[in-house]
Length: 284
Image (cartoon, rainbow, N blue to C red):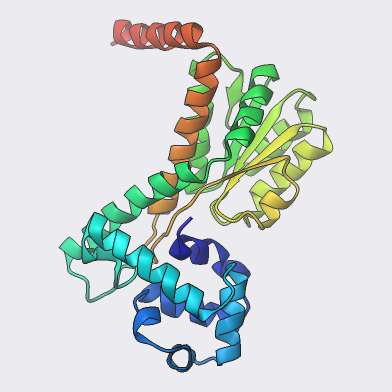
């Protein structure tokens, strides 16, 4: 996973001073290439020691390693997308509309590539096996994540699974509490800190249900007690109404789960999808 995406997923768990370093890099990644550690510390209103702690918090030994990794990363992204992201992934007030749209396109492509690249294949096989053995699948998320949870439930239902996505948190909690032991509960939260979704998985876990957290933050409260974590990778923007890029990453995971499950019963899956398509066309 890229350094910038690592920073994005870790930023909520950093100390306030380390977060200032992260925000400086997030808004302008090339600052690491043009500034010494002392200059970056001054620009972030922190200290050299804080910059070093920040590097270690994101899994790098020190500032020189951060510079080398970012130099390589920015070079590759410039070759792939042009200079779009060298000024930072966030959309700035001085960006033209063309630049803002180019950033969104680049970030969404990166979200798909990095999310698929981060898929734990063994974990995905475990999830598919649990789905195949389940008598019920309950999906849930709040806000934009609810839309994605609905999409997964719909896809799995069309593949013949007893899958549903409750309309609100209270319904979700009740379904989790009443779920049979062989059920699967899947919670979506980009931040991993959505209280209603955390409670949903906690209740399901209390019933002995296999729980799955789909989140970008693997050290989050949602992920902590889940039986399985499926990671999404996204560099979102401050203009994130409906969580633009993070939603794309979640939808990518939804498609991956549906395809992974469909492979288990390939002929039945093709027949089910064909029947669904025919039924819809006959009804129009």
